[in-house]
Image (cartoon, rainbow, N blue to C red; front, side, top):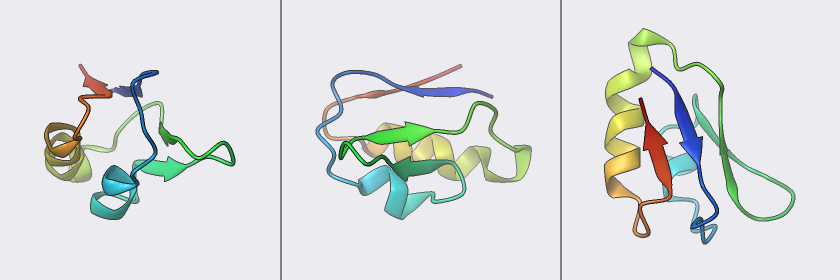
Length: 60
């Protein structure tokens, strides 16, 4: 599974608080995702993506 944070990100930090193993906040105040998501945290990452208030996280 892979995740990407697109330009819709408003920097609320919800994803980073829900799944810090995958999402972090950048110095610019937006979120970023690891290139590859480890299988053991895919469920948490998917839940964080679905919780994003502006649908800025794309998963595949």
